[in-house]
Image 1 (tube, helix red, strand yellow):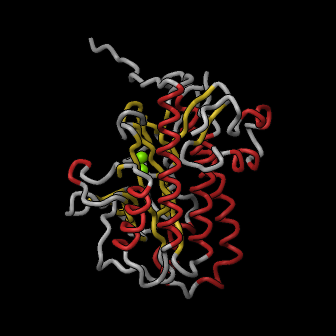
Image 2: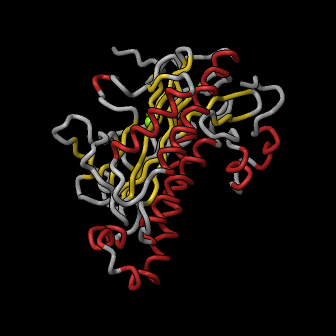
Image 3: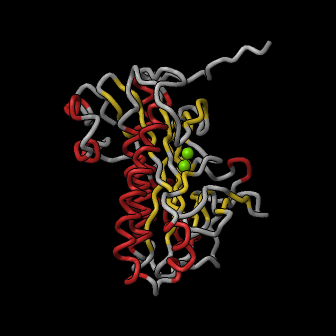
Length: 317
Ligand code: MG
Ligand code: MG
C-alpha cells in the first residue's frame, strides 16, 4: 500500500517574507524595465541585459542564471514559445509579435519570481484579448491565496477566469474578425479560436517559493475547488497561468529549454509571487502589493478588500 502525503509547504517568518518582498520589488523593477525596452528591432538578449542590470544594481542576484544550466537572467518567449525561451542576440522582435518575460531574483537567500507578456508595436485584437485574459486569470488566482483556503481554490479560480474570458472573446471575435484578417498571427490561430476557448497549458504550473525558487506544492492552473493542502499564513506561492490561442499541448525544443505550442498558436504567460498573510494575499512582486487589482476584481474579495493592501502591520522594506 502506498501512503499518499500532502506536499510539505515551507512556512516563512515575517522577516523572511520581508526579504521575499525585497526580492519581489527588484523583480518588479526588472520586469518593468525589460518590458519598457520592448520594441521592433530589439533582441531578446537586449531585454536580458536590461533586466540583469536592474537586478544587479539593486544588489540582488538573478535566480535563473545558472539554474540547471540556464544561461540568462530572464526567459524570453516569443509568439508560439510558451515559456523558458532563451534570450538571443539574433532573436529580434518584430511589430505584431508578443513576448513573455519571466524573471526571478534572490535577496539574502530568498526568492521572488514573476512574468508578464507584452505586445511588440501594434498587435491584433485577438492577441490583446489573450494577454488580458491571462493576466486577469492570474489575479483571480492570487485573490484565493488566503489562510484557510485549499490550494485548488486557486487553480479553480484561474481556470474559471480563463474560460469566462475565452467565451467573451469568442463572441467578440465573431463580430470583429473580418477587420483583423490581415494580421499574420490571426491566420495561424483563427481556426482554433473559432472552435472556442483558450488552451490552458497543463505541462507547466505554478509552485511554492521561498528559500528556493521551485518548491512544493505544484500549483495547477485548473481543477475542482476545495482540494489539496490548506493554505496558512507564512506560505508563499508563485501562481503562473499559461494560455494559448489553440490546443494546450506543448513541445520541448532541442535546446532543452524552450517550450512551444504543439499546434503553433501563440501564448501568454503571467506570474506573481504571493505571500499568505493574516491580512490576505500580499503580492510580493507587485509594487502596490496587489491593492489595485484586488480592488478592481468584482469578486470574491469584496468582503475583505480593506485587508488586501500593504498595511502598516506588514514589515516595511
Ligand atoms: Mg517565473
Ligand atoms: Mg515560476
